[in-house]
Length: 151
Image 1 (cartoon, helix red, strand yellow):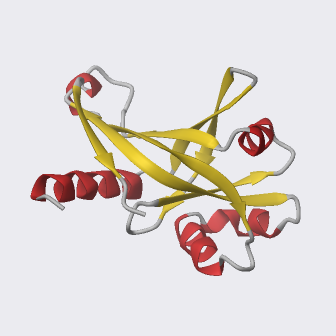
Image 2 (tube, one colour):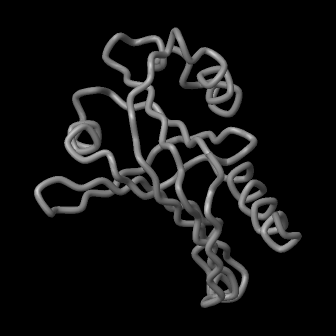
């Protein structure tokens, strides 16, 4: 892995660590749908995790079409964002995973979001893992860099 790629992945990891929420985009019947989700990622950045009730539109959509994208950014809703904000779009494939089997992943998620512990235990709450395929990092308004994720 090149030094540039390592630095880009480090920047993405820092952004993900600093932010609690991501926009998740799903699709069903050629209709996109976006949702705000609390998230966590593993240190290698190849898995992205979130919880959702299994009765939601996003859950139904990802069960129908598991190809999803996420967006994480650090914008502050100010004019300076044009030059200072960083956004990362990631693409991957989502699947529901067993909370009891994937305890290490759930622990990782709950360290970032301890307030969701009770929600995570509900029988109607699904634990979703996205196997990330690639990231697109945008900074300085139009500087775009693509990184493929190692599985």
